[in-house]
Length: 196
Image 1 (cartoon, helix red, strand yellow):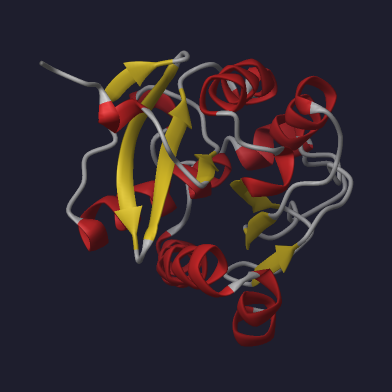
Image 2 (image 1 turned 180 degrees about the horizontal axis):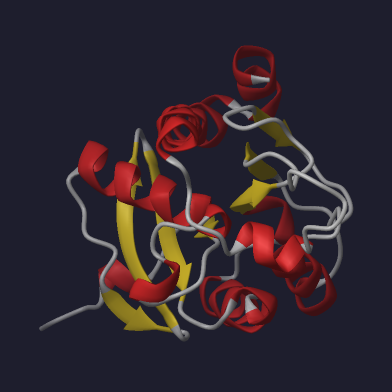
């Protein structure tokens, strides 16, 4: 008899934010997706199963069983896929980790928070609105602020990453993947002490 054990019993949901499609692949707003690519390689998993309007997989992260997801809705509609996964896996908001870009941080800076506002990030805002509040951990990857006040934020986050910045963002994404392992296995306080 076949039991679908793969779809049950996860301790954490990890959400990597970005915009789908080749047009957005190398943009600042896709720092979350870049982190997902690094996590895939480090644990030997593929985030490729279409579920909840997301590319997903269930995998082991250290000694924790986690549900990894890359919503394929656009950034500002990320909340509904996350809510569906939370409902199915019965994971509380406190065990949903969101990895995203942050234009208020210098390029390549990593910041872990236990909870907080959206800080103007549309993906975080939608998750807060649809999933029950601000009480979820997040890992933010600095993409830097627009170069001038005349530069619209939407144009900035959707702009291609320059070569020097790409190196810094890739390094931050690598550290974010390490932080995920520590956060899920050793707790957020330890992750904050090491990576912030």
